[in-house]
Length: 227
Image 1: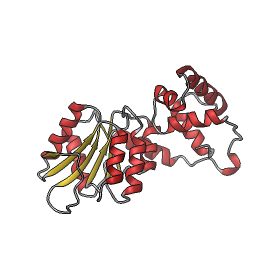
Image 2: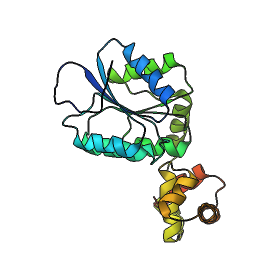
Image 3: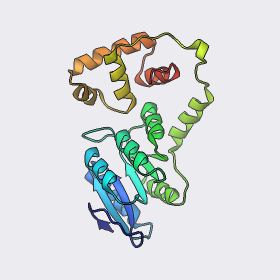
């Protein structure tokens, strides 16, 4: 196991793993899981999204695997996923996160993630999921799979049935940030407003969309071409 922050131009030898995770204990667990797979790995681990993005944008070749958490301290992991996918269209990208919200799952997949593993699964299940990725099979935690199949089985609203919903620019911006997996505090920071302003925007969104949860708001917004 090699830990490094210097990209390699070599196409032989150790495989390269991009690990974007801010929990040191979980980083150790992932490294142990990777080491147990038998191959030699060079791990590029980052606790913040911006540093990971900089690495991806300057790396001379794609990583053999990217494991990305969504709840990073400086940005949503969805933005890192999007950067990875734009830079390396064929690179395997898997989310490993505690976030099980449907909106986050859909956002990650739409950004380019190939799989989604929840951190509360056993280390054996996580190791098996990583092994599946390396064999070209992209894993999805069972309870997330149940949601997605249910979601896909429900047809989107037809054009004629879409609602005429008018959102203010601030409401639209709030909705966009929430759909990318940001928490209210992070949305407030990115918009340069107070937490109470974000909460007020969310209440207004719920009223206009006639929903009672963030997941419902994002789903209805997508069905009505608001996202």
